[in-house]
Image 1 (cartoon, rainbow, N blue to C red):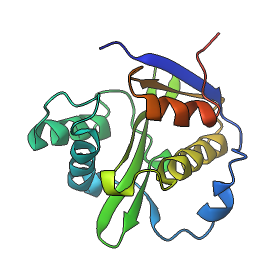
Image 2: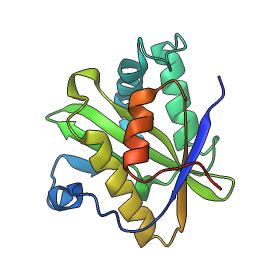
Image 3: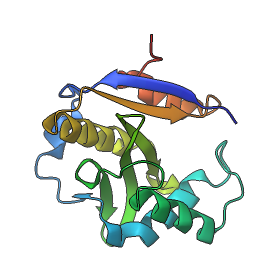
Length: 162
């Protein structure tokens, strides 16, 4: 399946969620010790959707480990975040570097927590961290059949590169 490449300038987001991020104790930087929770979240988020390729839990865990190990581009842990509800990871954004530009490798939300602003908040946090680190642009690749994700990314200022 081909992916659509979108990008945006890394500027402080003017998203209304930035105010909500201040003091958000449920929004934490994503760390290497979160790999199992992230792999389970990814599996649940993709299951039954246009990006479901029949992956197993072992497949998802291997992908997360490859990402954290830098096999798909350097992992940027200071720009990657997870949102928790108690002990459950309900959403996450993972940022790596691809072709010398930061890339949102994954932005996933558990099905029961979708459409509650988690993706927007996580992307705002990632873009803010990228801005603080001095990056100029961020990119992502999305399945063109994933209409909900496309609407979110376009609303947040992502567009096809010129």
